[in-house]
Image (cartoon, rainbow, N blue to C red; front, top):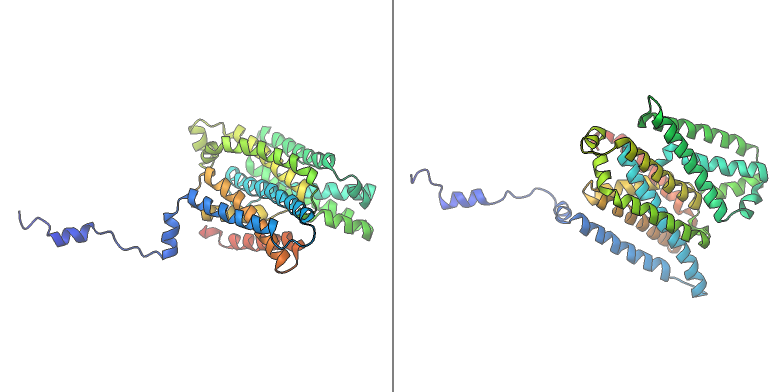
Amino acid sequence: MSTLSPSPAASTTTARPAPSTAPPAARARRRLTPGARIAIIAALVAVASACFLLMFIRGSFEFAFERRLTMWGTMIVVAFTQGVGTVVFHTVTHNRILTPSIMGFDSIYTLMQTVLVSVFGGLFLVNADGVPMLLGQTAAMVLFATVLYRWLFSGKFGSLYILLLVGVVFGMAFDSISIFLQRLLNPTDYDMLSVELMGRMSSVDATYLPWAFAVCAAVGWVLWSRRFRLDVLLLGRDAAQGLGINHKRELTAMLIVIAVMVAFSTALAGPMTFFGFIVATLAYQLTGTHEHRYVMPMAFLLGLFTLVAGQFVLQHVFYASGFLTVIIEFVGGALFLLILLRKGKM
């Protein structure tokens, strides 16, 4: 018996855990829970927001603070609609290299603005700008998406892939028509149209924000109440149906919610093709889980931190505050190409 019993030294050696070969930073990330990571990003957002709102104010404090507060509110809306909307779009399409813009929302917005300038002139966009214009453009884009979803999903051969393909084809067609009409415009109208077609968070009217917050609150409540259903949708159609989820109904409802979010964001602050893609990709990496109760808040906070910190640095370090959306689109496009090249390793 004595020969079979392990010696104290051998027992100690067996019970001792194997030393980790991971670098210290990786071990530290593993120790942080998703909630702790969200708390860290929220603290960074609070610091960046305080710096953006209160630092380097020259002249009238009241005027500057009100203007910055309006821009900060617009950033909240854009970060929520683009970031969370892209995460939900990835869930329903089971593809992380797509963006909601593939459904043609940006192209519809561009075509509507181009047609208005072609028919009524560039001054029409300035004179007609207001809440009715904002709601009308949002309603037109959501109506297009709803008709498209209902038509394709109710057909015999309806599927999500056909829906995406039709969205790409419609988007290319709308872009072609817009380019043709823009070539017929005079230089003044074209310049005014170009301003409308770029991201314009610094020039949003403060009267839009109560409507924007109301839309975000309603959509946020819908998504948060369905966060566990979104986790099930991530498993695929067969698994979701096996767990009692009406896959087709949930898919249609989520696509309409995405249409509302992206359409309202585009009508409010202009097209942003790759911003949601950047935020969603970083949220997956930093959260460390696929649960939507963590990924959606992380995407919103990362989007807000990117906009606020980027605007602060560009405005007070490089004195180029108007180029934030251009830089975001450039970085987003580069990240998109990088992930496409590494797709086999993701």
